[in-house]
Structure formats: C-alpha cells, structure tokens
Length: 250
Image (cartoon, rainbow, N blue to C red):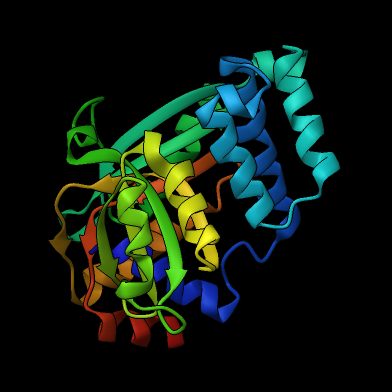
C-alpha cells in the first residue's frame, strides 16, 4: 500500500488538501485543456479527458469552468498551445522515488522551482528514466471503508477490477485504465458511493521511510504539490500509519 495515498487521505480528513480551491481549479482546468488539445474535446472518445473532467467534477468544479477548459483545448487556442507536459524524476529522503508531472507554459521556470524544492528538502533530481520504471498506470476507484466492505465491491470484478486494497479508512479498487469507467459505473449501479475514480500512477514497489527522513520527505512532497506548474506528484514511500498520524497532528 502506498504511503503517499495514506498521507493524502489523512490530510484530506484534516481539510488541508487543496484548501485553496481557486488554485485547485486552475490546475484541474489546465489538465482538462491539455487533454482536450491532445485527444479532442469529446470525453467519450478521449479517456484522458474523461478522467480529467471526472476529477474536476469530484472537486465540485463548476460545469461552466469545465466546458471553458475543454473549449480552450479543443480550439487549440493560444493558452492551450503554450502549455506542455514535463515529467521530472528524482529521489527524496529515505530513498523514496518521486515522479513529478508538470503542466507549464515555461519549462525553465518549472525546472528551476522543482529543482529548488528537491534541494531544499534533502532530495535530488535524477535523469529521465531514473525512476519512471518503478511506476505504472492503473485505474483506481476509492470508496469509504467505514461504509462499505470488500463484499460490497464484488460487482466490480465482472467489470474488470483486479484487486481491492484496504487502506484503513478507504478501499482502493484497482483495474486496467481502460476498465476504469466500467468499474465505476458497476459500483454506482450497485449503490456504492464512489469518492474518486481516476487513472493514477501507482508504484510497483514501496520503500519504508521512518524518523527524520519521513518528516523531510513529506515536506518535500508538499512543497512540490504547492508549485503552480505541478499537476501531480507520485511517490513510492510507505510510512507506518502511526508515524503518519503523529506527523499529521503536529
């Protein structure tokens, strides 16, 4: 189980994740625009766009904002044309692999800010390909473990679900990216409320991080996520739950 996802869950319960809604909407809109630019403005024929739109809906982003972002991308306007996707790879304290997905209109600025964050928090940027092999794309559907059990999720198997992981307060249903929509729809049809559904970058393996390294690593992750150009941050650390809870309460 990914410590990164556990940490995100803890922060969400505290209300600390994406508290600045305007900043969150800006990032979501940028992701929608790029997906529409690269694959067309029809979510039914563009899985990347469908996922970006669903994430925006899950965050309660207004429909008008979503449509404007799609229109910008589909129309290949100046804004859409100037945005490029850049992936940065590196290591954090404790040897955790970190993959940073950025959407930026200024590659040099993004590179300088991300490099500074790594350096400030005892991490290091690596060469392209240095850690990407540790991660893979998976469809991930999250439901509330306090309301549902694994038996409630059996319907997802027929729709393509491959695994269910218990992360304490959440159950994560894993599938191939192409099966994500079918798995979500199967769960919702069975009356299971879905907290989120997205194509995520999941680590194939994790490394346990403790002590001061754990605190420094989480500071690095948060510093990266705060960057305007950063779309998503993926990491393969596993920090014991009791340590995460203690850090979250600090």
